[in-house]
Length: 351
Image: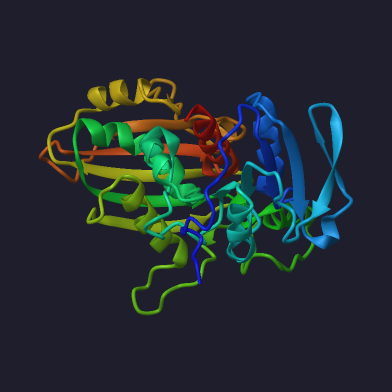
């Protein structure tokens, strides 16, 4: 049986205005995909919104029109040039091959194909050239890996990174629209002094934080999110042996992830040099005002394309001068998902 990375049929030549399908159009990322396509004036020869049978018939606004959501079936991809998948790994495994056989290039936002050797795992600012090696499917990375590598790559190009230590503070949106609504509802209940029983996440969310809700590997003690970030960061940055320590925490923020990262380099790296490199990097905005105590915040990263980076300072635990500490924030639904997928689609057109 062929895998998603097998060239079951060669995608047709990409037109200047492709027909695009969004799989999972009614979900949190699907809605953001529509927003990104409109905001970036993506050229479209047609747009199909696909979702489950229960969502079929709903309408979503796009460029002044209301588009009808269709049920996803095996025949949904006829004439489609680019299929943006954001409906979970099960749907991707079931339908990605079908889309490729129909002649589409699949950009998949799930974890289904990220570690397949023949499927490029792409953050355009970091390894955009990897798109050229696709066989019909391109993987969109885990949100933490995508956001982190945008900031880490320009530093790594200047001075190879030899170790990372990461602590993440992850928003509700990473667990989907239902988790975002649970955060809103539980916060409202808390402020009213009413009891609230969580049904989406395993612990009370309002005014609380807890270890990421991914399943924990009982042997290593690391959860699935942490293991994904390690593996995908190494792959995106082409550093297969890079040592990475990580702890992932869910925090009561709607849609922007934050991370505290300590970076150790092969050579000395000063904060001034790091700021200069980051200020010149695509997709990064330096927010590092020590006088005003103004650094990256989820409230300012939400709805923004750029990854905000600040708190750039020496790591006091490393007297060699080869380690820096920094803090960053990025919109999980944008750079962590929909924006990155649309940027990949733009690269497909540019090729």
